[in-house]
Image 1: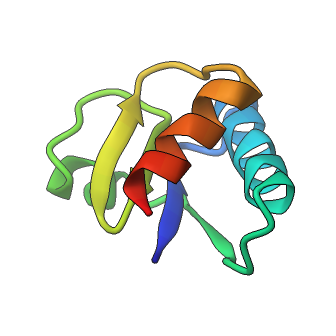
Image 2: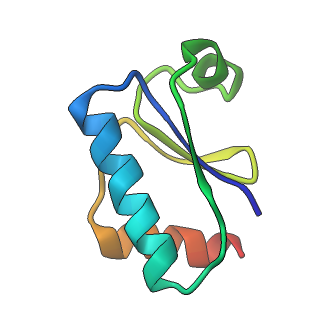
Length: 79
């Protein structure tokens, strides 16, 4: 499983990255979350807004930062 946060290094994008790392830790997963700032990668995923949370190279959240519990549910549903 790959988990990526894609964004422009803004505070909102960094917040999603931090929350995603926290979710992975709380779920007991031994997965490293990638933080990608290449805007071209966001476009390649078909997203026009950031931040983007992608699981297995598929966007699952885009354009906002949900709470920790929502991130955990999205990750669990992608297992």
